[in-house]
Length: 309
Figure (cartoon, rainbow, N blue to C red):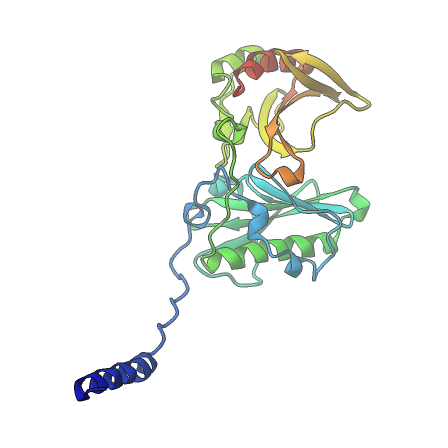
């Protein structure tokens, strides 16, 4: 080996062993610290997989889950003991809806995120409020008043903490891959009817108000004598049961259930975004009014033919 060749090899070796070891490793990126808006946290709100935001092993340190967490359009639901926990939308108009909510002081959150509590018919509901006054909700639904209590509230609190921790750390929400003909692509407030059409059938003037997911819409005010609600979701394949009539409405197999002062009409659509969960998309229309089932059938007959083919 000539002197020049040997020098080149030696120089290359020195560069390998000294150049690589001398350079310090890149410093980790600092965690995000700016005010957190819901849009920044979730991205497209119409396709969020809310189950993917939760740390279920951590949640189970408070109480064991007795059902597999199930995503739907705009929420994640799971059961612990005698309570059903639902995390997700609704969410907008937080300022007007939550003005009287009770702040939850512990644990302290960062990036402007706050946790507050309201109660719905004696059952606690927690809300994560973002700096743009949007919010996410952790609802608790008990089998009976006797079973409600601190255990379910502890699980709801742990659920809210789990989500807040992920969002504050800058984790990106996962998104469900809905098909092109999915109901998730529709706006529930405008896909089927105008406000005028709903008002004419309901007999009172109403306007539709949706949530940020666009998967549900309410015409009328909560607690009013006459309201219409439309919701898109995921769930088991619909089937008739006791008290639920199977009939054809608007050319589609539908399931009609009359309840006290109200009526629902449900129809199935295509399979959900995760076939392993054996879920199907569905549209459910609920009406509260005199002759609720008559109005519900009329609205469904106008809506179902407009579902994506």
